[in-house]
Amino acid sequence: MKLSRRTFIGASVAAVAGLRHGEVLAGAAPGPDIVEATGADPAALVKASLEALGGIGKFVRSGDYVVIKPNAGFANPAAWATTTNPDVVAAIAKACLDAKAKQVLILEYPQAKADKCLERCGLNAALATVPQVKVKLLSAAGDFQKVEIKGGVALKSVELAKALLSADVFINVPVAKHHYQAGVAFGLKNHMGLIQDRQSFHTMLDLHQAVADLGLVVKPHLTIVDATRALLTNGPAGPGETVVLNKLVAGRVVTSVDAYTLSLARFNQKQMTPADAKHIELAAKAGLGAIDLAKLNVKKVTV
Image 1 (cartoon, helix red, strand yellow):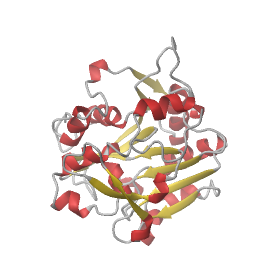
Image 2 (cartoon, helix red, strand yellow; image 1 turned 120 degrees about the vertical axis):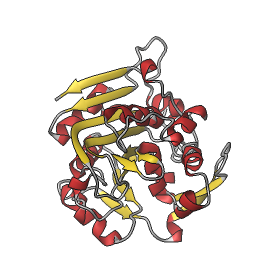
Image 3 (spheres, helix red, strand yellow; image 1 turned 90 degrees about the vertical axis):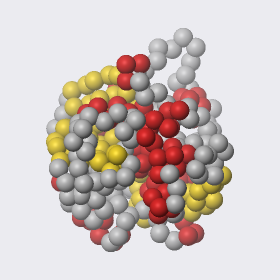
């Protein structure tokens, strides 16, 4: 059974990421909640992560329209770790094409110097190896559509990218980095690159609650956090202290992926918990995923 487009917006993670592809079957052995892949080659890391989750076919089927949302919003070099490793993004896009996706779209809403962001972070060069992939940079009001948020506490509605609303599959590919206001900017925070008015999140709303509320309507089928190198301080724009981890963290439930990623490094010079990045804790309280690492099924692979 194939769900219609737009179904994943506001749908349950189980319904979208599981039943959509027929993988939640009576008596079937559950797969890992989290995959932590370690290695120096980004393409090999992507391949190993997907294989550990059951293969790209668990997420993408022939004819699907796939949206990939990296963090490519800053006109900074990749070494600063303020943007997603471009080779990781390209490898994910290629995997989707190999699965016979009809269209793969890279979607981003850059900060200042939008025309320079993809060039300086290396994404343009990386995507040259997969010319079938399209890129859309959000900017105009017409790029967004109002969506109501049932159950939202701080956020009752949001202007969300139309390109996302028409997708069959949404893959979230943030970078692991510190954020001066949110604590960290991983998967849940990366959703803000899909909305029109980000300023109000930072100045008019409780940022943590608003990010958690946004998670009620934006639910990726797959989140892969780029922790090949991480920004530990002075995020989100950097430059700051960075560390090479050579890791990806992947899973179907973005809140759980975020909680696990916190354990990989000392962001803001401390070992953070979801309580220190409160949007993660609030998302879990809203039923958007487990954050008790002891209760998560974690599979570690080395490539």
